Amino acid sequence: MFIHYGQALGDYLYDVFVAKFDFWLAFGLVAQLLFTARFLVQWISSERAGQSVVPMAFWFFSMAGGMMTLVYGVAKREPVIIIGQAFATVIYIRNIMLILKNHAKGSKTLDS
Image (cartoon, rainbow, N blue to C red):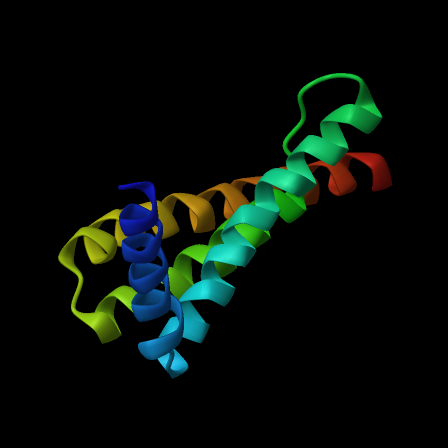
């Protein structure tokens, strides 16, 4: 019984990751890796600071991974991915805009 399940799992993994490997699968995997990297960046920054922080790099990884995942969803015609990433990417971009705006305000007050 376990051998049968093991073979079925092996066949499934081969079908998903090897037999169907193409440009879009590679693109989607890179997008997911970028998206995952944002959590590593946030975790490392928080550990260094000794408190929870969200560095600018988190938002750039979010935006890059989100936009790539959105492109992947459009290319693969996946409505769940398209809807989720379309809204999320707007939020990532807006956060970057707010951070840059606050940095510009801060540098103006320091120069005055």
